[in-house]
Image 1 (tube, rainbow, N blue to C red):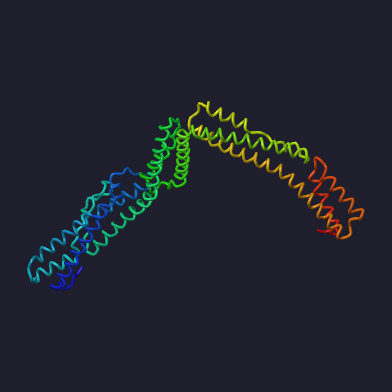
Image 2 (image 1 turned 120 degrees about the vertical axis):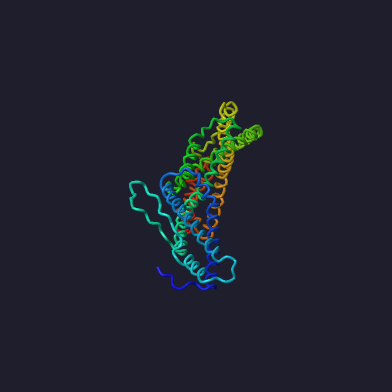
Length: 395
C-alpha cells in the first residue's frame, strides 16, 4: 500500500503527540480493567457452564489485546526515538515516521495452532496500521467488559442478599444456642451454600435465585422473630404469669356479672337455652397450670403463652359483652313499652282508641310486653302491627 508523500515536520509531531495521548488513555483503561473488583474475583474463580465458556473467550481476547498493545507501544517508542530531541527532522526521519505512524507497522505474530490445524508452510504474520490496531484492541476490550458487566450485574443483585441471608442464619443460630433449642437449620444452610455456589461459579448460566432466596429469607426472618419472642418470654415469664393470674380473676368477675345478668333477665325476658353464659375461666386456668408444668422448650412455651394471653383477654371481653347484651334486652323491652304508649296516645288523637280491631292489637301487644318472661320477638311484632294500624297500614 502506497503511503503517499512523507508527513511534514509539523504533521509528524502532531501525529506523534496524538498517538502518545492515545497510548496513555489506553494504558489507563487497561489498568482500570485489571483493578476492577469483578475482574480480580474472576481471575481466581472456579467457573463452569456458559460463564466459563464466555470468560475463557474474553481472556483469549484480552491476551490478544495485550500482545497488540505491547507491539503498539513498541512502534510508538521507535517513532519517539526517531524524532529524538532534534528541533528539525530530515527527509529520512520524516519518511521513517510516516511509515511507523501511517503504515502497517504493527506486526501480530501468527498464533500457534494445534498440530491437527497446522501446515508445513510458514504462517504469515499479520500487519496492521496503528488505527487498525486500536480498533482491534477496542473490540477485544469491549468483549471482555461486556462479560464483566453481565457477571457484575448478577453478582451485585444476588451476593448482597445472600450475605444478608447468611448473617440472618448466624443470628438465628446464636439465638438457638442461647435458648438451648434443637432447631434443625441444616437444610437452610445447605440451600444457601448451593445458591451461592451456583451464583459464583456460573452467574451467566444459572437462573437467578430470586424466588428460592425470598423463601429462605422469609423463613429465617420468621424463625428469628419466633426465637426472639421465646427469648423475651424466658426473661419475662414470671411477670407475665402474674399478669395472667390477675387477668383470670377479671375473667371470673366478668363471667359472674354475666351470670347475674342472665339470672336477672331470664325471669323477665324469654331466653333460648344457648343464652346461658358458659364459663371459660376453669379451662384457661388449667392451661396456665399445664404451661407451668410443661417440659417443652421456650420456643413452644412462647407460642402457648401468647395464645393463652389472647384467650384470657377474649374471654373477659366476651363475658362483658354477654352481660351487656343480656341487660340490653331489658332496655329493649322498656323501649317497646314506651313506643306502645306513644302509639296509644296517637290513637286517641286520631279517634281510633275505641276501634275494636285497633284495641285488640293494643291489648295483644300490652299483654306480651307485661308478661314475664316476655317474648321480645313476638312483642316487637305486635307493637309494629299496632303502629301500622294507627297509621292506616303504612309507616
